[in-house]
Image (tube, rainbow, N blue to C red; front, side):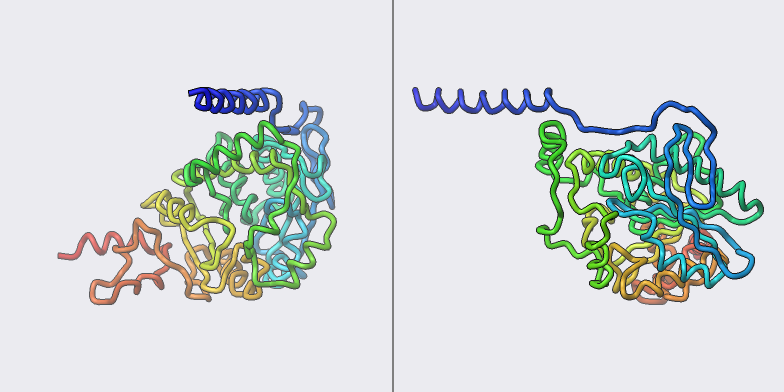
Length: 364
């Protein structure tokens, strides 16, 4: 009995210490400051409403551009992530802008999470400024991983960014809804007890890309964050929650790209995300690449992905050169030819799936 009592006391003490540590610490979020000016766009940076300066990179085609892309990088990365993709697109007449988001690259408060509100406000201002600089050109938001989550969160809020189309490249939609309970609990405790602790993901055995030379270059790049604060991961989880919940609200011309060798986002998250995508939205198109990893735009086979993006920028109803489009879950049956075998519908452009659905309903 005495031993049982001692064990109970030890458990109670442990719970007390955990609660005390949670109460004592909180995740650091360096949000945007008060408004002191109108946002502006210069040749190589954005100046936000609070005076924050966000470095901007621009890749221009040789001739008159046919469209303009505003690109948002992923977690721990910065705008240079789009150097190769933007050069490829520039050769095909597409102008690309990309900026370092707060907390990343050369933007203020390197390594600290800026909060979803600040990231969304920056995107909204940047889109407005880029559109004003290029009136008459289609404006396309392209978000990679974390950048895709920022785009999705922004689109679901009041006063969404002014854009004509959206490209989501392996968007970060690993919501807490999908995380196992132990993972959610561990993140909550760590973020409120050891928020400043830093770690790398090098020991997790994850493979973000098959382009080893590119990954080595990222490791040498001092602007790429290698040691990540726990509270930054907590902030990313908050953003992914909001992006996941925004999926049913996607509308218009939206291109969603994933790799079948995705090793950063769990399959459960991808499956649940795809099932959340709204039926009846003919502009939603989903393409998956057999050899694609998480970093689709920089994989060894990235030109296949980029060729699809370039074709879609020219015509959002185009048949993709890769032939890798597949119907969204809501159209998986309707898009198939009744006389064909299961899976034939994978080659049917989703932009036509609404028509396919109507045809299937009209069949006797």
